[in-house]
Image (cartoon, rainbow, N blue to C red; front, side):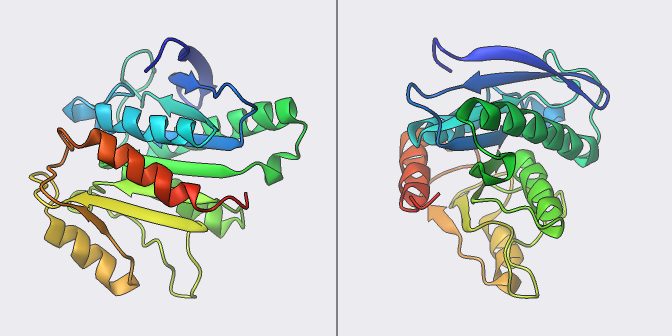
Length: 227
């Protein structure tokens, strides 16, 4: 993503997980994990939307981590329809929360966390957020871009008991998404009364609109400075 991006390998449940790590020049304000689109359809950590999300969080002062899912690039294992991928993301969350909190001399439970994902990655990020919510673990930010609601059971972000999976929720979708129709996302969002930011003229991959996408993510989450 930039000349300072570090490639690392972290031990996961079924083998090595390849990750790209970007660290801000100043002491990081928190940790952001970014999940890429479908591994069987060309999705990798180098996907342009995934990189854009990482840039947004780096701009906000977060250490950003982008894994290659199972069977992609240098990551071992094979595609697991979101189950194993969620566990791998959880493994990375534990690892980098511990290492970053130690570096900043913080208790791991106090480190601000952000999860973000694009398409299939949005499904994985939401699943991890749902699991952490059930465990009582707080997440500051959750960003879903082009969530693949037609192919996967993306969890509701706002729960029936009035709680939500993160303190700050952002769903962005392209008006002209040719992979996941906007109507399908609105049908998913309507019962939970979850607002959806629609990018006019944008397709699934936000061609020509990556900079506005980055700027909106940075602006939306940057308004919450209490973390």
